[in-house]
Length: 315
Image 1 (cartoon, rainbow, N blue to C red):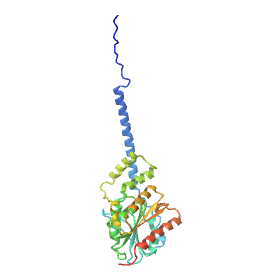
Image 2: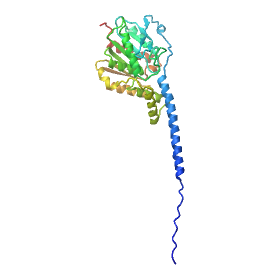
Image 3: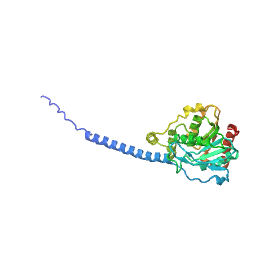
Image 4: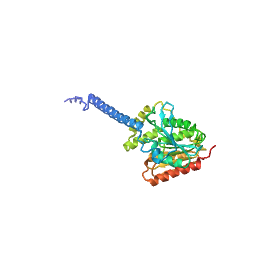
């Protein structure tokens, strides 16, 4: 008896091609939605970081009973005007320019300024931002360096100021500007940089981390791209590569442990910098100090540095 051949019957696929296509489409749409949401949040944070300007000045020179000062403004390269106070010390003495940090203003440094002025230095405090400044967004360093250079040019033309010797102090954004200008301008003879960074991108990432308490690599990539877009056209400086130009300029780096990421960058820049240099490690940077004893120690360290490295004598 002949055997019957088994007839092969095709079993329909449990997962149809149409289903796979729909699944891929849903996943793709979901990824696009997530990306757009992250981009939207990133754009909002980028705008916040680059527009944070603290304009509330709680004190002024009269608050410290300073009568020997003048209001002195200067014009930056874009035509914007920056308001400042020139505290008058010994005639012919150098001027020390105090550069406020991120989301801060000149009034926050007036206590330090009054101490330096009491020790016969001319002292200048100004705002990077203000009602007459044309650029009120920050690119976290390069624009501030350009503004500071314009301030140096104005101050060294003042009759009571030594035109050949300038001291710079800055914290965070102001510290970045101070180091960049010290590399570029031979009139700068001593510089103090408090809690700084090597590139504006590093500062931007630090602020994003502070706001969010941490973020993913993808989110960093998105926000970094948005920051670059917001900063397009800005002048760029390779500050770490030019540290060798400060071989004969005394430098004091201050590392505030209250901001670990910036503290690590500050200490890395200190290691790269040539002598003469000093490193001061404190629990808090200038902006984070709460106790009067800590502020006094901080200010005395800066005063002693300038007394030792920026002669008061007239040339």
